[in-house]
Image 1 (cartoon, helix red, strand yellow):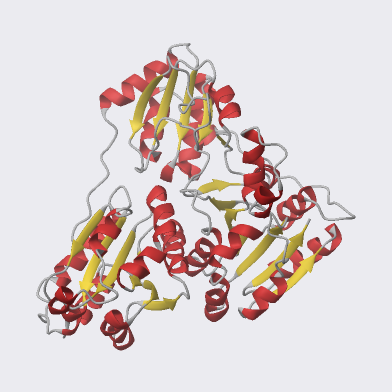
Image 2 (cartoon, one colour; image 1 turned 120 degrees about the vertical axis):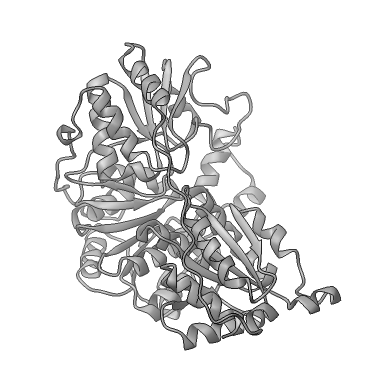
Length: 515
């Protein structure tokens, strides 16, 4: 057994089942091991940003890590944007990066780079495996580090000769993962006191507590105490729809977020941090809560706050089982020319029960999110780190993790161009993903931001870097070139019919919604 085989066998024994990859020469011994050994399903992405984003989507839905396999520092660099998003999502990922053979490093070959240094920017745990005798133990440690808690990216650098040289025949047992600490009695008492104080108090929730159990407890607490209930603007995963307790994300822009939090004297933080503006603006605050608002941490960021919320509900004498839930509703469908409201109403009416929505619709997101609140129960995945190009890969990984559930990718046309190679992987693996391209042929969010900065009438140069309509992107042709069936809708009726057809079939489909 060589080092590559020891690596693959150890990952499989630790419960890793999928390896998203874009390999090169230095990783071919690992590729050969994936071919020879059972346990890990290799899935090719034609760009490293697809590989890393798919690993994020898989982790969010499977609740355990996938592996990635990337080629040296440049390959890792190509995947950094979606590793950044995964880091902000606390997604567990075992990130394998090949490197030159140890004896070759001193020659400074063209692809030589500081792989460890690059990895440290997005990883919570980094190790370079220095011998085939250690690679099995290193892999076991990487899995344990990735699952945390909190979940994080664990990067293991694998020199080529460590992969090809002989390794011991024994496979190490999975290293024990660290356990999430329970809520401290003092923190529980302080949060309960604040909620019972009669002072204006808020409850800000994120992380795994945004499942149905955590939401029920949070809603019960808010109902019994009068607290204002929010979740972060961008979350790893949110359960929502008919029959699920509702929660409102903090507004994206600073001014409405400040208004939402205005007057609070206490803010209870569950799996998140004190709220801050997404960007700085001249003469506007970075911190969104009032200056005199006390921050009370019930559960640290990235940890599961569900048990703590249930303990807090019990301390307040309220029952999560009685929390109000969203009532289902059938939206009135639109006719005539296609607009964003018509798109949202059709999605809300047709969304299958148990669907997974990957949202990178940017300026369309608020409307789509609001109007699908009463749709069939579903999970919503957010753009956690703000680096665009996440939506299509995230949907790809989610579909691998949950092959029995329909995945819906809500995607801005500009953002989709960053990682359109995801469609090829969806076609190759026959993943059940319906992609809706929200085609306004503009980087619309940047036009909004220009206005917020007082630049309401940009000249030709500024407009030229914000519009993407010359030449026009043809998403039907782009999708079909990747092997995905596609259509275009310009009327509300056509969009509804095309979406209905996509939702009643399996496999990848794309609809360009031109509005």
